[in-house]
Length: 442
Ligand code: AMP
Ligand code: GLY
Image (cartoon, rainbow, N blue to C red; front, top):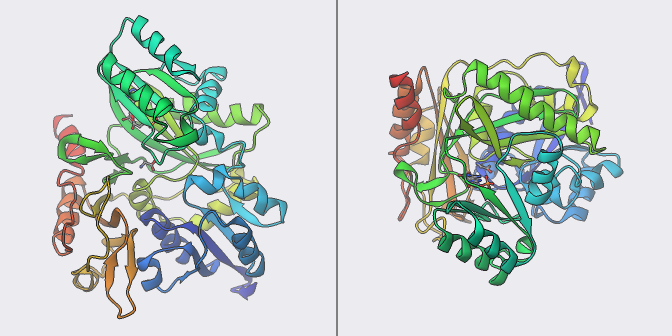
């Protein structure tokens, strides 16, 4: 480690290759406590920004461990898979500092059955449910149900695709067969949850915790469907904004008390340590909120709008979480401005997509918007040997703008989006519109 300004400077290893991870790396690189940022594996944008991309995948835990030990890294985990595989237990067992929940705590995301039973045990509001490990028994239950609308969920991790929201019994039978008989999600479909369908406003709520205290991050809103007006299939997220005006002060307090604190206390009570980011996908129904899902990590693209608004040093909170001293941490300071993110995707996404298309306009964007109001976080990009930036994934870029209000942030983000191009690029044109309507009609 290196000594600097009277303190020890650290190396940080960020696991993952999306725009969420690019945003995490960008944020921690701004910390006076950080010497160098490594990505495993990173993307074209993290390489261009001057961070070091390692040729190590997120599932190669032994190689990651060796690297982190050799370079004395503090590690921040982006996606859920390494957490569900137990990377935090492995790193901690070897004396390394890493932010994220243990494998046991990661079941909150890696098993829907475990998560639902946990919520029931601890009185955390969630939709009524039943668990099945036989397709015929599930279909029999659907046939006897008074309601036609039901949600069918595969138990295990399915890259965000294991949930089918049904409007008829026929759709539900098909979903059960697809998951349990056709096994489109493999072993993730060994068991399913049948859940009451809820109707309301869906919001994301993300906190940091050291296992005892929780600190809420700024509120945000994802846009999961691929097309405008929330049409088409679900994606990993096509855009986001922060703050989310739908969550007022009273609702914020309610969610903190009845959901987030209960979850952290419940885990501790069950003897499961949770340190890291806890993300609740919520449905607001009247003056209550119900948990649709827990994630044990930051959201993507929520991170791309939350971190640009965080004025405080993220590493300061990461260290307090790891050390279990979050009760001594100062409050987070947030930029009052609104952040909006538009995700630019490859032709075909969220199904099979094209890659290798040359991206143009990024230089123009960098030079025009060097005042810090605009940010570009890369996901599926790579740099070719001759220095061109080409597409290399489904979600390719997150374009972010900060504005004095929602309207200005939306205008700014789309004026930036208009400068970027590649063949087949698509994106939603209505990111933030719902918030704008809500603010106008309030
Ligand atoms: P999940 O992965 O559990 O968040 O589910 C993916 C999406 O399915 C959510 O973002 C919701 O849009 C929808 N969903 C999940 N559970 C329910 C439910 N009980 N009622 C209505 N929609 C749901
Ligand atoms: N934006 C949804 C997620 O990260 O799961």
